[in-house]
Image (tube, rainbow, N blue to C red):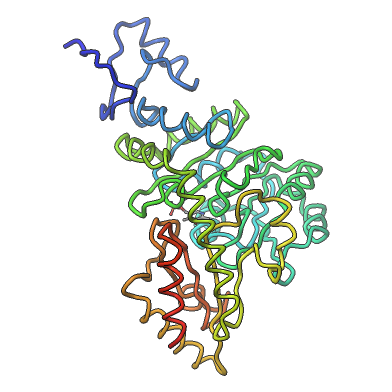
Length: 388
Ligand SMILES: *Cc1c(COP(=O)(O)O)cnc(C)c1O
């Protein structure tokens, strides 16, 4: 059956698992050029390798990132697996350095997969107080000479901003590759590739998709050799996104800049409001001059400071703080739900201590993932809840 041509500016959802290779020479060429990207429409082979709907969304994403290439995966963690694994080589695996203040799932991936299963020798770089010491970072680099450095631009949940350009330049000086998880910052305010990062990853589940109903990840970069390795690894472990999800993500990406502007301006307004509330002990938000990494944030970010606001409710004891935190969560629960994710269009929250335990033993602390509601609505809800 011949395909009927339709005038559409959209790439359809190609649900095909395999594609029609018209003759043996075409088939041979397709298999020989398989790793090249983007694909020639005649040379698609199999959707786990590459898919035209997915490629269209990848091109749109690369454009947002100002990158040469982007690859989509079915989750942010799959993107992290690809970003790290392309640097793995059994014959010459050295140490890898991870910032300690990263997404909990990434930390578990490091412990359970990289260390326990793959036998990696890893080093963790911890902040000095509430910010990263560049001198300490350089000392660790010199001491351990890691091959790969992995960090997040804005940490979770304490919102420590890393001086990414400095970290990259020191890492390069010692010959390490740098992977940046830029999920919290987004390319709207900061693009680590512009400062020489080798790979940037995102959990697209968060702001890029932005509606709390799609799971996806992105690996992005400028180096063609890394692209080849990433395509190969994605294919071999099957970390491919589905064409349906890629299509939906493309729709969401068309409003990315609009949405993110509202996320960030709402978050700033909420942070300032909470900061003046007498029932609040402390607000963590990088735009506030009380934030330990405010200086770095102001120098790196041009259009905002992220949409996560972490704050601590006052109380005289551990128990009192715990009770007040729970009361606050109950009071807002008609409109702000406790949902363990972030980057949704709706404002959602997570208590810190019940999730992170001993790592952040702050029973009055709440992480707000600020949505894109009208700011007055949001402020009304929070103001009312904090009066109790
Ligand atoms: C959510 C998240 C991830 C993991 O992404 P998934 O899409 O849930 O697999 C990685 N890094 C950060 C910073 C995240 O917030």
